[in-house]
Amino acid sequence: MLKDLEIENVAVIERARVRFAPGLNVLTGETGAGKSILIDAINAILGNRTSRDLVRSGAARACIRATFTALPPEVTRQLADAGYDAGADELLLYREISADGKGACRVNGMPATAAVMRQLSEKLLTIHGQHDSASLTNPALHLGLLDRYAQNGALYDAYHALYRELVGVIHKLDALTADEAGRRARAEELQACLDALEAAALSPGEEAALHERKRVITHAQAIVDGLRAAQAALRGEEGGDTPGAADLLGGAVEAFAESARLDPALAPQAEQFSGLYYTARELATDLADRLDAYDIDPGEQEQLDARLDLLYRLKKKYGAAEVEDLIALQKRTAAELEAVRGGEGDIEALSARKRELYAQARQAAEALTQSRLKAFAAMEREMKAALEFLNMPGIRFVLRHARGPLASAGQDKVEFLISANVGEEPKPLAKIASGGELARIMLAFKSALAERDAIATVIYDEIDTGVSGLAAGRIGQLLKKTAAGHQVLCITHTAQVAAFADEHLLIRKSAREGRTYTEISPLDMDARVRALAAMISGDKVTEISLANARELIEKSQ
Image 1: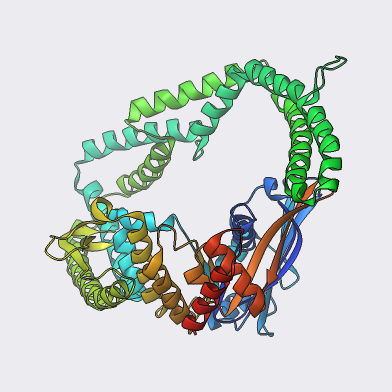
Image 2: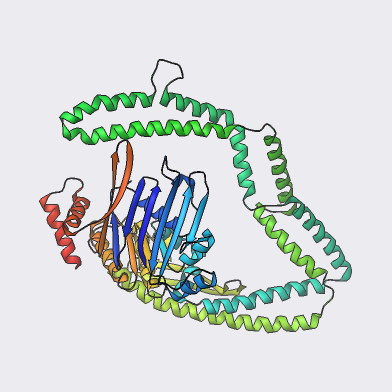
């Protein structure tokens, strides 16, 4: 369970400490208040890739600390295996991101890597964002989702081990059964291919990076001209009499200050003027810093062209679409070359082993298939009940299943189909499900999965997007139910969902002395009522909206 989170100098958050409670923790706030920054901070502490852009402007570094309690046994074992103190029932993760791009990670006060933090966090916390529901529209991902629900990892591993061995035996047989002259010719062909690919020293993703760099170099002068023009517009021409936008905004701030002092109702506009002024100043400084990045080496263009030409010729020669295809070809070529040069071998023994492995793999694949079909039967019942509860009555959730040749994931081809209305034939999710329906379907799936997962903390980032009315209230109820066995953190803009919170945290943004600050505060009952009332009626809280907010909270309990 995530006990607390400390954030320093992360974007607009100068310093914040958030204590999370068991059960359902709801985070609300206006758009742009900093909810996405909180998710970015949690992603960083989980060991995911981050950027120095996360560091607050003017700060040397950003620091994030997270404390987890009630650790799962698997995490405790991972800590012990990695040499970290696993005696206490708490885990402290620390991530530091420097403004110069460097960083540091610590686990219980000891140095660590982001990969170690990522491995530990897989069993501690999972984040479901509002765009993750799109995975439901991709049939290629449905088998993985079904396996997660089936919890059939042991069966999958047993099958996959047999399949890999079977493929290896088949490759050896193919190589050995070729005639000697053919094998020699094949070995020469493979060696030539391998020599060319190894000499190229290929790297994943390098072609896209080269094209991006070439585009920058080609348009460097235009980029610099644009930066300088924008900088001049903000700061004014150097040595000129015409003020820039930043100076004009500064004048507006001074001119408006007296009006705002005399009429407090103008304070929001005064804050907006001030924010625009400091944003313009910071942007002008940032543009000046970026100009140094376009000091281009004259010979770099020639080197880039030569490298891109080599990659183009290799892809054309070997029929590859991407550099990654060439890298995969290099690995396959090396393996096949080793097999070809291995000699005749015992073809009869290998053939017998192939038959034995195929029978075992087919049996293991069928066991995997049965686990999936059995899991879907249970999943369909849970999904139907959950979706009817989420105001999607009459829904049918169907599995399109077919057995095929053995492959790395078994013999199954699956796709989830849905009929949202009585009398309609089930169709692919991408064709008939709206955004709000997809959100509810994914929530129903996550809710069903939560009962099987060992992950203690689940974060839902605006899972209720596109949903309102009765369905939104039902989402809150389902989240509350899920939180009975798991800690749930939910970012929402919907009052019907927020009303079910065990702990309500408000994220607010303000401007002081020309800087933007975000604060995260727990709310007592009175503050909760006002926060829900604001979500219902907007900034102008009325007695009616307050009464509605109290009613929502009372009904939720």
